[in-house]
Amino acid sequence: MSIPKEADVVIIGGGVIGCSVAYHLGKLGWKNIVLIERKKLTCGTTWHAAGLIAQLRATQNMTRLAKYSQELYWDLEKETGVFTGFKRNGSMTVALTEERLEELKRQADWEEHYLMLDNFEEAWEKSLKDPITLSEKEKELTEYLYSLWTWKGDKWTPENENFYELKVNGQICRRIWNSMGYAWLDEIHPIENIFTDGYVVTQRYICDTNSNNGRESLFGAPFYYQDTWWIYQDYKFSWDQVDCKNPCATSVQYFANRVPIDLDDEIYNVTLQDN
Ligand SMILES: Cc1cc2nc3c(=O)[nH]c(=O)nc-3n(C[C@H](O)[C@H](O)[C@H](O)COP(=O)(O)OP(=O)(O)OC[C@H]3O[C@@H](n4cnc5c(N)ncnc54)[C@H](O)[C@@H]3O)c2cc1C
Image (cartoon, rainbow, N blue to C red; front, side):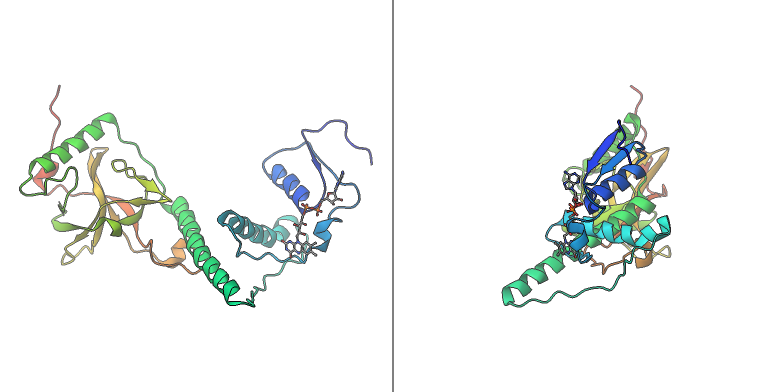
């Protein structure tokens, strides 16, 4: 077989890495790829590999890579029609010393944490992400509302732009301690805009639960968008929805959606003065 005179990409070495690079470039739409192997495909170190793909790795990225490989090998037969021999048996790691046991426990701990975050991120990307941007006018009106609230300093505490009590849809909602305010929102909150590791560190309010509509928690502060006042409200989700393949801890347990506020509190009837 003659070697092509030209190529867009030349990969040297047909072990698992070279083959993988060729495969992924092909998936990305690259056409003119040449892979050069000096003997036979996979004849090198790859031939010796036992084929184990343990997911518990030393770093988060290695773990993600191993997780991705698992999925890829699992689906490869469906995609190509070629049986790869890949089986998912699970595995067990045995520690021979106390120190090694300690190390494994630590790994398992943070592994669970990261897998949980990945699962949440995936669910959030798929079902909740819907970024919006406020216009200058909407921002102005929102900020004006905040200034009115602050202005009522005897009723609401005078701390700038923080509301300790909100009346939303007839319910009194009281702010609770900030560190308990993590929520995954359906968009980056246009006002607070503090977005860390996929979830928003935000104000959280617990509302009167005597009402019939079951509203329990609100997140963030109200904001004006497309002729409506909005806030975030938690909603009950099932773990199936999160596609939680691995055990999920509950430290990030809130998903919150943007919901309109009924304007039954006169404070929302603010209008900007024309300049
Ligand atoms: C005994 C053993 C067990 C293992 N078990 C596992 C396991 O269970 N799980 C796991 O994840 N990993 C395992 N590994 C590690 C894994 O096999 C390697 O990390 C992996 O195969 C490396 O792939 P590679 O493509 O980088 O290298 P290679 O597979 O070595 O591929 C390099 C290729 O380049 C070719 N080449 C070199 N020079 C040239 C040249 N000048 N021109 C053209 N071609 C060239 C070689 O012929 C070779 O085919 C194991 C390794 C060993 C040795």
